[in-house]
Image 1 (cartoon, rainbow, N blue to C red):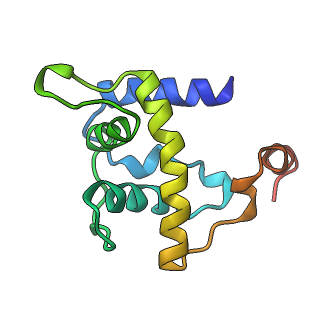
Image 2: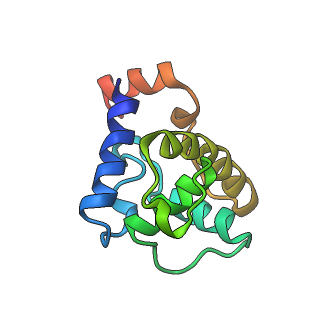
Image 3: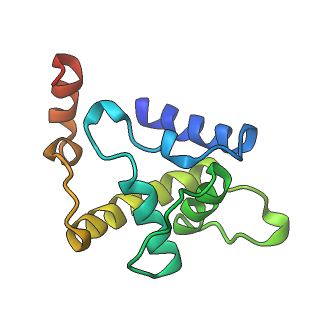
Length: 126
C-alpha cells in the first residue's frame, strides 16, 4: 500500500509541480541513502553514459525518463507517463541504481535490499 501511494504521489507531483528538482522526491532521506544516487543512475541509464550531469533533472524530465524505462513511448501526443509505466520504470530503476553503485563505488546501506529489514529499521530508527 505504501509503495502504491508513493508511485501515485510521484506521478501526480510530476503533473502539478514539474519544475521542481527530482532529488527531493525519489528516495527517503531517513533510509540513509545518498540522495543523488537515484537521479544520477537514472540519467546515466537514459543517456547511456558513465558520467552523470552535475545538476539534477526536473521532476517532469525524470518522470519521462522513468516512464520510458517502464514502456511509455514518449510521443508528442502521449503526455506524461501513467502510473503503471512509472511503477514498471521504478522497478527497472532499482537495477540501474545497483549497477551505478557497482560502477562508481558509491555506498548504499543494506537496508535498501531487504523489505522486512527496512520495516524494522523504520520502526526502530537508526
